[in-house]
Length: 317
Image (spheres, rainbow, N blue to C red):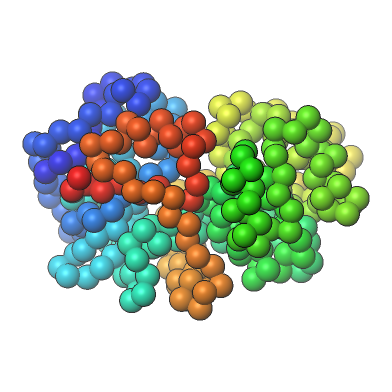
C-alpha cells in the first residue's frame, strides 16, 4: 500500500511516500480502515520532529485520524499514528459511524478539532452564561469551530484573532463579534477594547510565547486561560503569586486524555456535534485536500500559517 514513512526526525523533507508498505494486520481489538481521507493537524509537525508530548520510534508513519470504510460502513476513526496511508489500524472503541449528510472531510474536522473545541468550552474552560471568550487562531480547524460554538455554549461575546485580514474576515463570517491581529503591538489593550473596555473571562490559546502572556494580562479576576498547543515552540513559565493576585486559572488540554474515556468524552460529545452540523448550527471549514504525494507541501503550508480550516490528505493521489 501507499503510505508516508519517516526514517529520521526532522523537517518536511523527511516525509517520504512509499508504495510498498505492508497492509497492517488488525488484532482482536482493532479495526482495519480503508482510508479515503486522512486528517492533517499542526500536531503532526511535532510528531515529524519527535518533539510532541508523546514520543515515537522509527520508522514512523504520522497521522492520528482517518475517514473511510470498514466492511461498507462509512466511519471516522482515531489512532495513535499510521493515518497517512491507504489502510490504517484503529482501536475499535475509537471508530465512529459517519451519519448520512456528513461528508468525510466534515467528519474528520468534527472528530478531532470539533471535540477539542467542545471540551475547551465544557470540560476545561467551563464557560458560564454570558462570559466573553477569546479564540486565538480563529480560522484554524479548532478555532473556526470554537467561534461557531460560542452562542450554543453560552458565551456572551466571542473575540477572535487571526494572522491575516482574510482569516479575520472568515472569523467574522463564522460569527465572531470582533476579529483582531494577534501580532498587534499591544494585544492586551486591544482585547480589552474589543470587549467594551472590560477584561475578558476565558481565552483559548494554542501559540504560547508573547500571545499567551498578553492574553493572560487581559483576563478579568477569576478568568481562565486554556492552552491546548504551543505553535510558536515558546513555552511559558508562571509564578503562583501572579495567579493568586487575580484569582486566575491556567489549564492545559491534551485531547489524548479523552481516549481513556471514549463513551463520556468522545462518543456523546461527537453525537452532539454531528447533530449541530446537521441542523446547520455549525459548519466544518475544510481548508484543502492534498494528494499524498504532496505531503511535504502540506506540512510546509500548515507550519507557515498559509492554511485555514481542516486540511486533508488523499492517499490515492
